[in-house]
Structure formats: C-alpha cells, structure tokens
Amino acid sequence: MESTDPTTSDESRGDGGPPAPAADGRRDLRAIAAATLDRLPELVEAFVTQVLAIPGYANGEVGDDELRSGAGASIELLIRRVAGLPLDERLRRASAEIGRARVDSGVPLESLMQAVRLDFRLVWSALSDEIRPSEMAVLIAGGADVWEAVEQHANAVLIGYQARLAEITRALEDERREWFARLIATDGQRPEIVKRAANVLDFVPERRFVVAVARRGESALARVRADVLARGASCHLHTQAESDTLLVQLPNGTGDDQWRRWFAGTTCVLSSPFEGLAAAPRHIRLAQACRGALGEVDGPRLVRDSWLELAAASIGEFRRDLAHDLLGPLRGLTAADRERTVEAVRTVLETGSVPAAAARLYCHRNTVFNRMNRFRTLTGLDPSSPRDAALINLALFCREAAD
Image 1 (cartoon, rainbow, N blue to C red):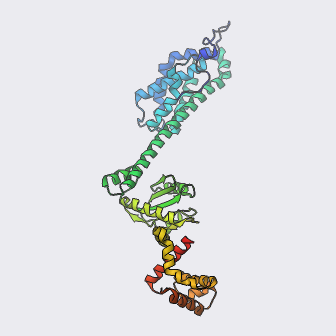
Image 2 (cartoon, rainbow, N blue to C red):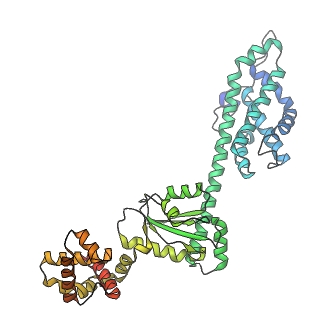
Image 3 (cartoon, rainbow, N blue to C red):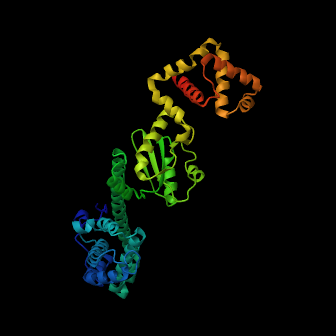
C-alpha cells in the first residue's frame, strides 16, 4: 500500500530542492529541515531509546533492527517532506509498511500511534536545535507544514495497520469456516478433526453446546453472537446460502432460562443443550430440518416443541394420505360440525383435560365430551389413548399442511 501524498517527489512539483538562503543569511523551513538530515542516525537512536517506554514495544515485540529500520524510514520521510526533497519508492511505501509490520508484531494500535507522535516530537526538536535565533519566526510559521507531514504519515500508517488487520481477520475467519465445514462433513466421527476444529473455533470439545438455525437474513443471530462473545463465551456463526447457524459453547453453570434469553427476538430454531462438540453435526441437521418444516416462526422455537411438524414434513407426499386415512370419516359431518369436532379434540390434546378445554372453548364440558365421543365413533381413534393421541396430532398437522 502506498501513500497518496501529492508531494511524493520534487520532480512531480517541478522543484529543485530547498532554496538557497536569503541575502541576510536566513533560511526558510525547507532549508532548515534539509540540514537536519545529517542528524538522522542520532534521531534514530533517540527514537529507539524512547519508544521502548511505550507499552507494546517495551517487551520486545519489535526487534532492534526492525525498530531502527522503521524509525530511520519514518523520520527521514518526515524531514524530506518538510524539506521538499524527493522520496524514493522505499520511503513512499514506508508508512503503510510500518503499520502492517506492527500488526504482525502484535503492537496495539494505540501504542503505534504513540510511536508516530514520538516521530513528530523528535523531528520538531531537531528543527528547533537547527534554527538560528533570527530564524525562530520561520519555524513557528512553518509548524503547520510539519504537522501536515506527520498527519500524512500517521494516516498512511493507520491505513496499513487496518488493511493488515483485515487480512488477518479474513484469514482467521476462512480457517474457522473451513474447520467448521470439515466437522460437519465428517459428522463428528473423526476425533482428530473434532480436536482441530475445537482448537480453531476456540471450543472445549467436551463442554455443553446449543445450536440455533435461522433463515439467512431473517434473524438477529449476528447480534446474539456479539452478545455471547461479550459474555466471554465461545461461539461460531456459519452463514450458508439459505441459512445461518450459530453454535454456542455454554459457560459452566448456565441454566436453560438464562441461555434461552440470549435468543429473545430472534426467529430461529434452538436445539436442546448437548454434550460434546462431536454431537454438533447431528444437532445442526436436526435444527435445520425443524426450521424447514416449520415455515414461518415468530420467535425462537425449541426443537423439542417441533417434533410433530418435523414428523409431518418427513412424511412428504404421503401427508395427505395419512390425514385422509385417519380423519377422512369426519367428512360425513357438515363443515361446521367437522371443524367444531376437530377443534374440541385438538384443544383437549393441547390442554390435557376436558375441563380445561371447555374453559378455553367457552362451552360446557359435556359439549366437549359429546364432540370427543363423535370423533371416537367416526374415526375409531380415542383421544384419551396415548398412542391414538400421537396419531391424531400427527394427522391434524398433516391435514393442515396438505390443505
């Protein structure tokens, strides 16, 4: 990455370097700056001594040779810009390359910017030492030019730092996606892949996990991911063409009520907590299947509350046949009687008792009993029988899905 500074060389401006001193011997700022180039080795050593007091440099994250090389390039760059002297390719690239290199050395951005400000102080000090008493006004008037040179340098350093950081972030994310995909592709059956995936994804393989699956762009799983990471927990958000999958490692001691609250406001399907990263592929497939079977959802929905929809969806083309086979005899009733009978049976199955169903339907319990008896007589299925109740529930879901 190169600086976009318009004053990259004298040739680009048609300059021939700093002007000669005035008739009275006074020099302008460019001539004063050019004279300080002779002190470059001294300024570099001063920089190295002082920068080691900055956090991020003090522990030797950047080697001595790299420090001197970077200091020499940045200080020479600043002096040459103020002096109006040409910049070669090495100096034009120096600022961005310093920013990129400090990312690789693990120097925090704040520490790097402190070092850039140290460049300014050293150059300003060198200019102050160089001037003659009669030239003080020249230095004061030229302060804005010095600061502009520093700003150009600092901006290019920052751009280089951010660009390198973005490259590393993309590379890490690509690696996370790759190992998550390998985990899924091998169905958690290869221990070495489970172990490597756990390491890359920052998971402990033996811990408890939950999975959330949502249609892409329809949920707030990215917000949940940010919240989970802010709590110090580990997670991975995997985006595919049609869905988003969030795998969360639950912190020790996290209760069901607690982790479910994290997903409030999302339109997703949630697995039950499960033990071990190796089980994640199966739970992801299950949550994805439930999400597909449910159609529209208006909030987080647990897999354990979605089995009937999943079973009905799994029957596929035979849903209509199942509904007709089990509920077909009800067609002998008028449409109104048929719907009232089905409503009574469904309500009993949902509430678990006739009195509760009657209260919800605002009718007498005997009315509910009569409708249940009618249903039993016509279909041969008894809603009070656990086996028949499961079949009735499935048939009702298939009937609704087929309509």
